[in-house]
Amino acid sequence: MANETNATTEAAGHAAASGGLPQFDFQWWPGQIVWVLIVFVVLLAYMRLFAVPKLGGTIAARDAKIADDVAQARQLKAEADAQADAAAAERAQARSAAQKMAGDARAKARAEIDKALAVEEARLADVAAVSDAAIAKARDKAMGNVAGIAQDTAQAIIAKLTGKAATAAELATAKG
Image 1: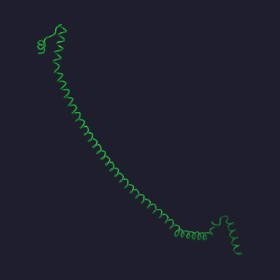
Image 2 (image 1 turned 30 degrees about the vertical axis):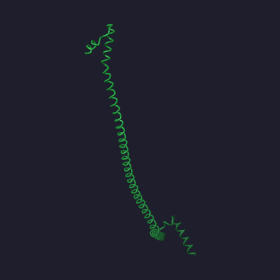
Image 3 (image 1 turned 45 degrees about the horizontal axis):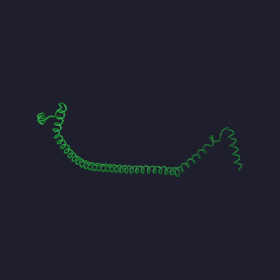
Image 4 (image 1 turned 90 degrees about the vertical axis):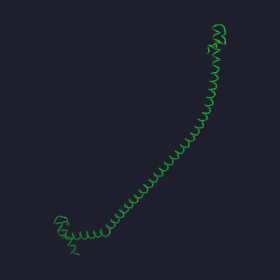
């Protein structure tokens, strides 16, 4: 024990004599280098056997998770695109059916309107024919009376102007 105390005192005296830090004293470097190498090898072995595989597994698991998520996202996008295409096809089919239905309804309404219009035009044509016949009869009757009215008017004018009534022979010559 005394030897150790002497060595420690001697080392302390030597350090004090050199005036610097003991780790920079060349006398201690071989031991320090050995311990640095031992710690480095132990740390390297620990990293190689335990830490790096665990980190590698974590990185691989993360990469696999990302790849799975991307694959799932692509699959969901493909399904969504397929559903969107199906919905567009259904929408187009429904639009086509609605346009066909509207066209059929327009055609049916047009046919009903044309039928009602034809019936009404036939009725109006009958009324117009009856009215034309009545007008022609009234015109013919009126034209038959025009000669008599003209004679009566001429007789009245002559009587008023001359003061005497015209005879039937005079009126017949005037008519002629």
